[in-house]
Structures are given as structure tokens and as C-alpha cells.
Length: 453
Ligand code: NDP
Image (cartoon, rainbow, N blue to C red; front, side):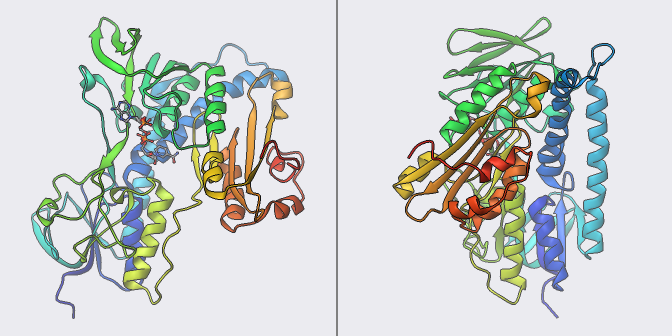
């Protein structure tokens, strides 16, 4: 019999924590999870899931506009009702919270309601109990971070934006990352006058340059007001809204300002300070490939360890962690290269592997294949939306090292392409694949001549 109450004590019931808890329990480990907020973490409650639901809602705007060219006549102008969307979303999240609870229950994991603090490398205090565990897993995720400027307290963060009391007819988002471009698109689609304010010359730093420029142009065409190389100086309340003063002297009056200026590990109050755990410069925890911090019985995964802040990454880390600590084999280290990702701005971005700029640096000689076209649907819809597809090939090996798309359902398309890129397939093998017609995605197997080298 173990000297500990549990083999594994997980702090945080988000994507990574729940997956680690369930998978460890399935191996026979005795597992408990502490959660002080909501089951499912950021992704389910204030991230991927509600964001995607709102993105669907925003796409209806275009669907109504596109419908006319196909013969549909809508009687009267369609009207959008924010409380209906918000409250239906709340109902769906409650349903998912329940599913997460049942998943833990069915796996035999004890769920404790409360914020745990780590007392020593094998003890936690939570909800009035002191519990011992052989291993403690910190899976508490991240929390929105907002810079300090006059009036920054008048902004909402990405946890709060989903539940605004009233619909912002005029909306502004500060930042140039995933959350900023997604919400600028969502509120624009829902009918707001939408502004994005970003301090750099072009948003989505780190993505392929051509993809960023294409997205800029498409978002601008859809009506998002883009303000680059400028920041917010101050925000003040005025009658009927918020006055936002920009560093270039301009002022904008809006109803809501979302600060989408990054997220930080949510480690405060966990009692970890006394252990002096090794951290990265951004405060995230350093772990080895077994997901052990510098105190080996304290493990960590997900957004607190500073890798890509993506749910599927946390899930993959959880599976790896469990295999290392409770499995029979030693898994190969997780390959963080070529992780596909989508940005749900409108139109969507899907991307896997190297950007053109990274490939030029890492591969030397490359071939770049691009298709930039008007999707068939828009021949009748009248929409001016275009689609970009792009393959980057290492000229020497012929391996496709990057695939990028800006267009409708780009995430869905790139998910399939990602398998080929992850498998290291060559451009010749892409070319041998017979396309599916008529689709947009068939362009990925029919691009024959390089656009440039
Ligand atoms: P990001 O780190 O992606 O972007 C933060 C943005 O804020 C950057 O553009 C940054 O500018 C800017 N910024 C930082 N500090 C300041 C400042 N002091 N003043 C003005 N601007 C500032 O964070 P997000 O909040 O957008 O998202 C967090 C993470 O969540 C993402 O990185 C992603 O991993 C994940 N996520 C994933 C999604 C998906 O998979 N679709 C959707 C949403 C989030 P600069 O570029 O100049 O540093």
C-alpha cells in the first residue's frame, strides 16, 4: 500500500489536467483533481468552444449576403440578438461542464472543489483538507494579461468578452495575436463597427508574411478597421461610451475595448514560490521531457510550461506525461515542430510547418507554390472574398515543409494536409494525389509550377 493518499494529485481541471487525470486513472493510478472555477478550463469556458460558436454566429452575416445570388430572398433585414447567442452559449457550456464532471467520475477520479496550494513536494491543502500524493501535477493554465495604462481598468479581457451585458455596437480590440484578430472578425461579423489596434506594422507576428498580408487585406475588405503601428495611450468614460486615445493622436469612441494582449501562467496563490522552481523568462515553468519541474515530484503541463498555448498540445502532453509516469514504455519526446493551428479570423487561417521566411533560413533553396483564387461559391454570391493556398517545399529533398491557407474552413482543410506534412511527404507525392472536384482544397494537389524560388 502506498504511503500517499493518491498517486497523482492534479491541480486544474482544464483540457490537460482532465486528460492526464483520466488517462492516469485508467492505468490503475489513484487520482484526485482540484478545480476552483469551471470544469474544462479556458478552452471549454472562455476559449476555443465559445469562440467557435461566436465565429459561427458571425459567419451568418456573410451567408445572408451571399444567399441573394443563389436565388434566396430574405424578407426584411436579418436582425441579430446578442442575448440569444450569449445565453445559448452559456447553456451549451453548462452541458459541457457536466460532461467533464461525468468523465472524471466514470474514470474513478475524485474531484475536489477548491484552489489547492502546494505545502511541500508531496502535500497539498484544498477545501480544508491536507492531502498527500506521490506526484502533484500543476495544470492551471494561463490568465489574460493586460498592460497598465490610464483607463486600462475599463477594458474587458478575453474571459469577460463572451458575457457582455449588452452588444457593443462599436468594438475595439487591442493586440495583434490570435485573440485580437478572431474577435475583431467576430464582432465585425455580428454587426459592430470593429477596430483592431496593434503596436507593430502587421499583426500575427510569427505567421507566414504572405498569409499575414493576405489576412490583413481580406479583413479590411470585410470592414474591420485596422490601426497598425499605434497603441492605446488612455481610455476614459464619456457619455454613451469609451473614448480611446491612441498614441498617434487619434481618438476613437467605442462601447467596449477588449485587451487581447497575451496570457500569463496562472501560478499565483499555489504556494509554489517557496520551492524556487526553475522558470523561463516569461515566468512559465521549466520541465524536462517527463514533464517534471526542478522538483521532480511536481509535474506541469499545458499553458503553464510555455509551449504553444493550444488545447491539442496540452492533450498530447497529458498523454505523454501519463505514459512516462504510469505506462510501460518510454515515449519518444513530443515533437513540437509541425503542429498545425488555425486562427478563426474571417476568413480563417490554417497553417502547418514552416513559414516561407523560416524555410528560407532553415532549408536554403526552396520552392513556393501559391494559388490565389476566387472560390467557386463567390462566382454567384457576389462576395469579393478570395482564398490563398500555399505550399513550401525544400528544393533539395522535395519534402513539403509548410502548408498555409487563408480561406473558408482553412482549419478543416489544413488538418488533413497536416498529416501529410507531419509524415514528411514530398511534393511529388502531393502531385500523385488525385484531387476531389469541385473543392477548393484540390488546389493543394494541383499546384504544378512554383510561384517563386
Ligand atoms: P498572443 O500572445 O498571441 O498575442 C498578444 C498580442 O498582444 C501580440 O500581438 C502582442 O504584440 C500584443 N501585446 C503584448 N503586449 C502589449 C502591450 N504592452 N501593448 C500592446 N500590445 C501588446 O496572445 P493572445 O492574447 O492573442 O492569445 C493567447 C494565446 O492563446 C495565443 O498565443 C494562442 O496560443 C492561444 N489561442 C489560440 C487560439 C487558436 O488556436 N485559434 C485562439 C485564441 C488564443 P507583439 O506581437 O508586438 O508582441
